Length: 182
Image (tube, rainbow, N blue to C red; front, top):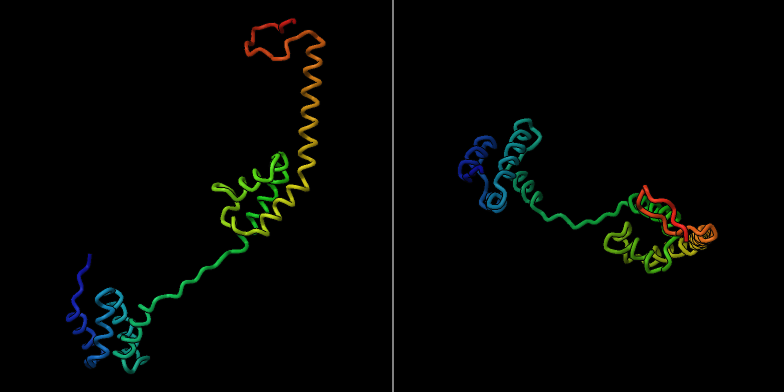
């Protein structure tokens, strides 16, 4: 950790600026120095270079303004990248078309998308988005029900065929076992 001493920095600044600050300007710089000495040191170097190149005529005024503005609180800014939101919504819609169509209840879809681990949890308070996702699910759910019905029909037909052949409908996990006769 570096240690900074105001009187030493002040002496360097006086030498490079070729004059002493008035008390008001110096106090403004000291106020910032107490919390951020490295910032003041860097600012002195910056202003000194500009003064020596003829870009600054009143270095102490510029230094005080520079460090004061650097310490001014930044306004709180919140920004949302709409591209990321659009990408997540597109992924959620694709998921509904592929896997979500097999979910039986609206609540399951909402939990999967907007719940604690949902891909749209960031926008859980967005009512219109929830309506949009449920509407899409309502459009694709009949296809999911049809696929489920077809799977149940195939399973039923398989069980009937096995029953007709007098075989045990539940296959054995033993690879050496022969099919059981009823």
